Amino acid sequence: MLAQEESRELGHDHIGTEHILLGLIREEDGIASKALTDAGVTLDAARKQVETDIGRGEPEPKRRSGKRWRRHVPFTPRSKKTMELALREALGLGHNYIGTEHLLLGLISLGEGAGLEALTSLGADPAQ
Image (tube, rainbow, N blue to C red):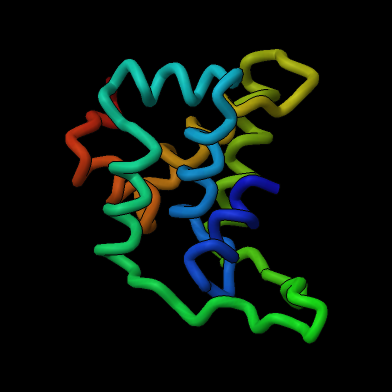
């Protein structure tokens, strides 16, 4: 949900690995957020990096009531693969849930994508 919100906020028409990264940072109680914060990655810096790398799209149009239309925002193939890899990470660790830590591991083990590029641009070492 947080990745979807980030995508909409940036005016993007998809949920990519970059939005998953932003969502992981926003989930402040999650293990991934703590790990990213410890690595010096902040939400503001990550948003700016994503905006630099990807740009901003058009915001969702507003209805007469002032509320925004809510359109379906699809996942990209890489973000789907990230979630599949997160499942594999969770199963490999013997966990019966998928947490933010598994999603971060999935994003890193994908080895490509705007989310990983943003991380490395911010000085985070994926191996760490």
